[in-house]
Length: 416
Ligand code: AMP
Ligand code: MG
Image (cartoon, rainbow, N blue to C red; front, side):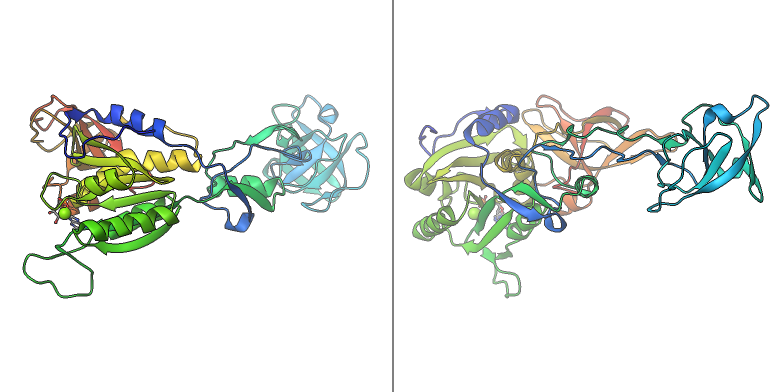
């Protein structure tokens, strides 16, 4: 269980990797699973290991349109005349025997009958009635895809925790699976907090802004392929927040909020969370995204994102997305990190890790170049929209001039 902390305490800035480790230790993979039709399985996570019930390919077959024959019938001259004995089309195997000195016309994917062992492509043959002259291929077995050469029956083909994407859909269909056991989708309830927030479609009074975080969070959650419950905008009012917490916790595996986790006078999230559940609050050594609240609300996991729009997206990406993946049982993968040449100057104060929003491209030589997307304020969502990667800047790093080699992290599926 999490230790209850004074929600108003101001702990030192925490290293994001340390925060991640602590968070991951607090959440469990959900065990529930369900059967779904393969047609509805895209984006779901496999709940069991699957072995192939068939050899792949299931039978020896041709990878070319051409002629199949016995390699031993070819003479050393380089070209051999063989007698056409029949045909093997995809779905219509040749029924006869592989007699010496014969060949059959064969199409791509058609079975190579036992006895014949090699295929020559049509372009390297000549037909004169029933006589086919065949240029010798390099080796016995050319252009034949052997039964079981990809994998044999009983071999593991897909692993529990794999996300079902296009290739997995095809693999499952290849082995004839029409229903597949997948993890239950995680349910996430979310709401925004703030007296200044107005719903889109309404008029703004002075001092008000539209609630945008609920929509960027909705976009992120859609990419995470979970069930979401949108509880709207909640006022900076203790009892309203308490009510929203209770409703959210009763309906979801995870409760996600934006705003109200800083040190302002109307920042009630931490207080109510400590009263209703258990709280861990951090000020993270990252920019954007310093304040972040985490805890338990009944059985639900709670994540309180900062209100600044870029901060809420970055903390979601760095902290919440890995948690969701763990809870959904997805096999973890390491982010792709690479080096690129900076083409713009970067301004930075030492003290926090920064995730500056940037665009990576490849130049004429195929080398990576990266340029930041202008203003990097934690409220400037356009910097996220224009970007396709983060430039990762170490805690103690200061200003970085154009021409420097920097570390970048291209956006993963949740951000791109
Ligand atoms: P807070 O974390 O509540 O102190 O908010 C920090 C900043 O983010 C303030 O400028 C808020 O107006 C802004 N903000 C908070 N919530 C949202 C939201 N849902 N949509 C857009 N901006 C927000
Ligand atoms: Mg607020």
